[in-house]
Amino acid sequence: MVKICCIGAGYVGGPTMAVIALKCPNIQVAVVDISVQRINAWNSDQLPIYEPGLDDVVKGCRGKNLFFSTDVNKHVCESDIVFVSVNTPTKTRGLGAGKAADLTYWESAARMIADVAKSDKIVVEKSTVPVKTAEAIEKILTHNSKGINFQILSNPEFLAEGTAIQDLFNPDRVLIGGRETPEGNKAVKALKDVYAHWVPEDRILTTNLWSAELSKLAANAFLAQRISSVNAMSALCEATGADVTQVSYAVGKDTRIGPKFLNASVGFGGSCFQKDILNLVYICDCNGLPEVAEYWKQVIKINDYQKNRFVNRVVASMFNTVSNKKVAILGFAFKKDTGDTRETPAIDVCQGLLGDKAQLSIYDPQVNEDQIQRDLTMKKFDWDHPLHLQPMSPTAVKKVSVVWDAYEATKDAHAVCILTEWDEFKKLDYKRIYDNMQKPAFIFDGRNIVNAEKMREIGFIVYSIGKPLDAWLKDMPAVA
Ligand code: UDX
Ligand code: UDX
Image 1 (cartoon, protein in one colour):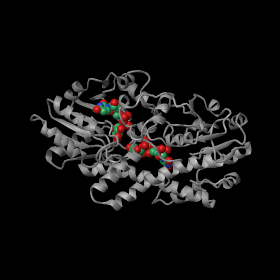
Image 2: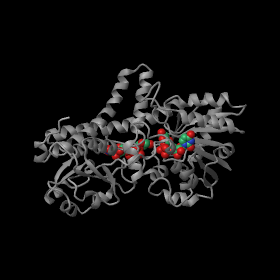
Image 3: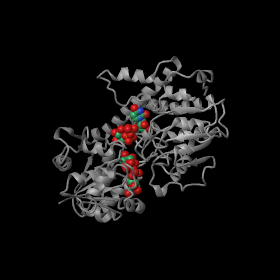
Image 4: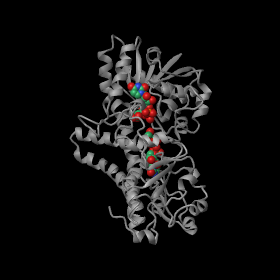
């Protein structure tokens, strides 16, 4: 029986391994992590991450051929294929600070594999890593190998949170990069055989190591660039009276461009986009390509601009001050159907409003108070470290309350900011919300999910990203 082990039971490692176990009953899969708390949660009824469909997959194979454990050494030692899916945060100090990936966790995983291995192993990069990481890992493994043969593969994950299970069941492509040697080809074939249990052959692409690593960064950079492009357009739409939804629709009808990923928003978030672009920028700089680096940096700058623009719009519309005004924040996760808050635009928007002394009341169906308080006080690049290394929840930010109901969040508020596109926010009783708010009552829709016309009929002053502005907003321009 082939044995697989995955180091890192996070958003990537957990769902990916669960699907491999489900689709390959003849393979034994162990997911290991240094966090006891996380492993306990994976072994309980309350999984550590919220992902539609995940519960059923885990229940279908946990205890049969899927195991979650903190006994890292044992499982690594026993397995034929070791996936590594540990954090690769942005460096906060030293060379490349603020841009380069910090490979501390990756390096320690590699050293540990070399230490405990007693048989040949295929080591698979699942974490997004800078190009040529595999080479570094290969060096660590071979210099510590005691005669054991290690083959390194890059198998970047393309799943998106909220749709992870569907993405894993039915991937657009699976990418496997390996050394172009007989041993390398054999390792690529072994991993290909795992995916071939359910993925059609023509969707399994094989490349060299560097191409696989760079493809992951490139794919995320292209996706983020689309959002920054449409968000840049949204600013122009507001200035001119065009409607960004109509523009996106018209642009997306061109089959060369396509309709997906063209929704204007308050900004993109998530653990990948910004980190991967910073990485790409760093690699370009290191390779003497400052113009290319500058080009990609602009994608992040527009994203920051979009978040600032939103805050400025809120403050400017409310007579240039939100000091001591209650502002309801609906949605804190970086997108719907996930409880993940890493790099969520809500952090910047909330910090911006707190900077103007607003009183925030936050509601998100999947994010708890501890997480929100932690996020609002954490330093910019601390978020991608394992939980036990993150700052403990500090004394609560006094101007923030976190509630478990949208109606409570909006009660007596001056304004509502919608920051995540949760379906339930579309179905709220906005008349009831309006009646319980201070007047004039504002809605700032950062995801364009409410029907602005209906809201105006109720009495709200409405701001929708990239849409023609209310007379009120035109009279109160946001000047940064
Ligand atoms: C992770 C990385 O964050 C991301 O950069 C990469 O692209 C894919 O892998 P994700 O699964 O979303 O993505 O991260 P996270 O949920 O933080 O999971 C990483 C897990 O690794 C954590 O549970 C952490 O405890 C664990 N870990 C970290 C180890 O088991 N050992 C370590 O040395 C470090
Ligand atoms: C992304 C990639 O899609 C995935 O392939 C990769 O493996 C990991 O990174 P993820 O970050 O989970 O996945 O979510 P994604 O759906 O890409 O959304 C990222 C951010 O962009 C979210 O904040 C989302 O709200 C925002 N977004 C997305 C927009 O603002 N507009 C859009 O049209 C699409």
